Length: 103
Image (cartoon, rainbow, N blue to C red):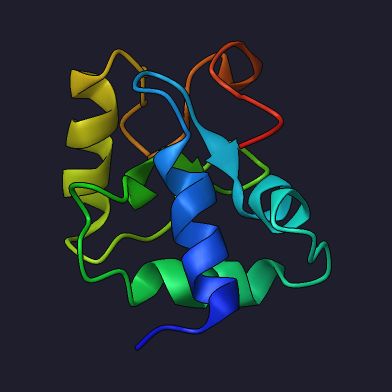
């Protein structure tokens, strides 16, 4: 069973629309734990249902796509399939245009 914090992270992550991304830091703020950026990343790493909980839409504040349970290449493929342009080194092109600030 997941903690209330983890469930809140998954719920907020489900609200990220297709073709958009948010950051680990913004997601931490959205679940009322602004200092828990690393805990957000850990919760997403343990995500048992990557389809319904689209953790590939959560990225680093720098625009780097960050890690993914199935690897960075797969994360980039998923983002590109949703219309989010990712360059060859794993950075989102024109990052601010795809960023939502509140999940």
